[in-house]
Image (cartoon, rainbow, N blue to C red; front, top):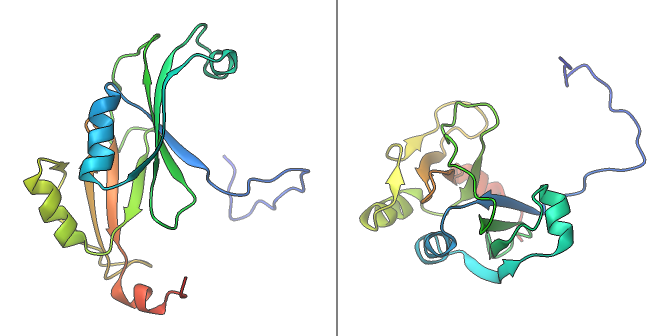
Length: 172
C-alpha cells in the first residue's frame, strides 16, 4: 500500500483541477427530483429525459443504453452539480448503501442552521440516522453533523461548520 505521507508526487503532464459533479444512479427520477428540488431546495438546472447517444453507451459499457438525467445546482455559489440518472434500460438491482461498506460514498452539504433544517426535514418525512451530533474533536470541533438518506438509501450529510470557522471565513 502506498503511504501518501511519504510518497513524493510524481511530475505528470496532466492534473485534476476541480470536482465537476457527483452522479447518483436512482430508481425513480421523478421521486429523486421531488426530493432534491422540493425537499432539499436544490435548483433543477437541466433535464434530459431520453439520453441515447452512442458515446453514452461506450462510456457506461451498456450497448443501446437509455438514461433519464436531471442535474441540480448544489449551492448558490458552488460550481459543483449533482446529477441523478435513472437507467431506463439495463437497470441494475439496488446496492447496499451502508456507510461502512468499501466503495460506498456520501455527499456532504453545508447548511447555515443544521438544527432547523433537521426539524424541517423530519416533519416532511426525511429519514435520518440520528439527531444532529455536535463534533467534539478535530478541525471541525464545535460544528454539527447528521446523516440522512435520499429515496434510494444514498447517504447524505448535512454539516454546519463551527461558528468560529464561519466568522473567520473570507468574504465571498
